[in-house]
Length: 316
Image (cartoon, rainbow, N blue to C red; front, side):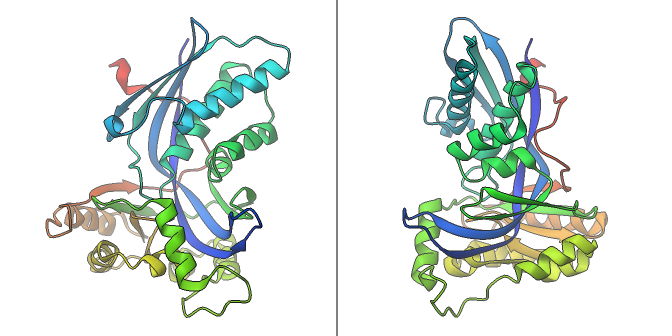
């Protein structure tokens, strides 16, 4: 019997680089928020053994449907975990209906991996504890543990040390993804050039006041959250599309707007639905943006991680 989950994207309310490990991994301090822009992940036990992956929806034809895909990697790790418990896992079928754009800073691949892990665990009767799932997720990618947790959280280390925070107050979130994308490697190189990524390095970049943002989230002050939005990647990359999108968003008086993750998507927080709707409509008409009008999504905060029930769109 197929099981489907809604796998939410994430935005970064703040994102700072605090250093690097000896192995070259960057250390981050970030506050992340799951949003109601979701891929639908469907899994089932298949015959013969092995893993199969089918991708549908937005941009699916540009993504690999093989063992290089994060969803496939997550399924392979889950099979290993099942075998370690002395069980012989059946084959795994996966179908993902894509809505989250890639190369956007929205953790689309990580959301899919988290969706696969969560759905398979439910298919196997909650075989693994949450900590075990998070450990598997961290082996796939640094954002996967957060995508499993969802909601609102502060992430440190390489992004896998999570401190859950109170839910963000109800609000509307407009996300705009320009045609161009940014590779994660390109983004980190830009940050490295900007300020070297060591605690001793002085930097002219404006750094997030993460503790102030956390206090704002904990107190439920959406106004203060909007004031504290900050991302060092946005400043290091200086993408013209980001500035164009933010100028347009600011015409509709959001609480704040920011590039998410390593880009290239930009989001704005709104206290009033009508302002968010007007902003989204205007963004869809931005023909002057390089590559044409952006993809625009009107979302809300998503409470928790991958959720059931979710309807598989391919079933008609």
